[in-house]
Image (cartoon, rainbow, N blue to C red; front, side):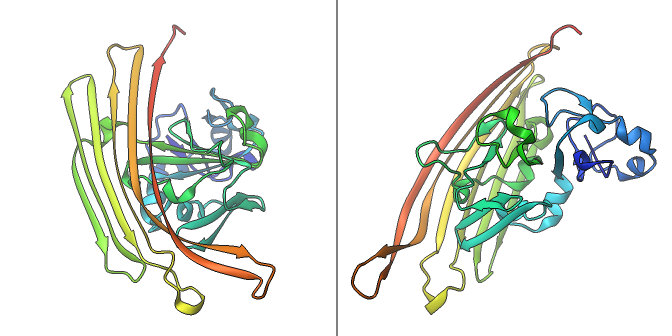
Length: 296
């Protein structure tokens, strides 16, 4: 993969899916490239097939693994604050309004969000629940963002933009990892446990568990209604039975409690009644993808 500055709006920061030998984060080789070489870099973000970046009629930005590690962010919406043209507003501790080019809203109805190609859009409520979109950040390889309707080839809702969160292959996360953080006024505790192993030379598996407990933000009247916590666990398996085929299977399940405040309209004064509540959240997903490389 290659990240770097380039020409035109198509190279807002970087390009992914590049057919190049420059390693991830190797900026020394990147700086030595000429303008012509930078223009000949191939990307697959926009059209799902390699094309030279100077022919790409879209504003592409990529958050690399190094960007994510250095950001200090604790949530995916906070990571998206690093992307130019993406507006992120935090309404309360567990609610965000995310949008592109000024079209923001709590449920990002005009924004297509994918995790490893799986849409996290909820058709029943027409939106994205940002409070339940969470992954161990060390599992994320990159986040590709297309600002504007250039990502509409990926499906519906990509009217204002397209965000694709791509996780690392299991082969890159072998071994064990434990992370823990806490003690902050809001970030009470965040912990991650991950294990990667290879039972066969052609099979790699990664399992993880993550949990957090976050306190309320500073609200009017010091009302601690938006305290929340979640726990999740998941796995990813990559199997390569031969040179032309690759099978990826991933799954995730989560649960938790989310504090909330609702405003109920009344005809008699006071005209608005604020009610503190708590909602239980839970869900899961399973994704399977088979890639086969044809001759030529």
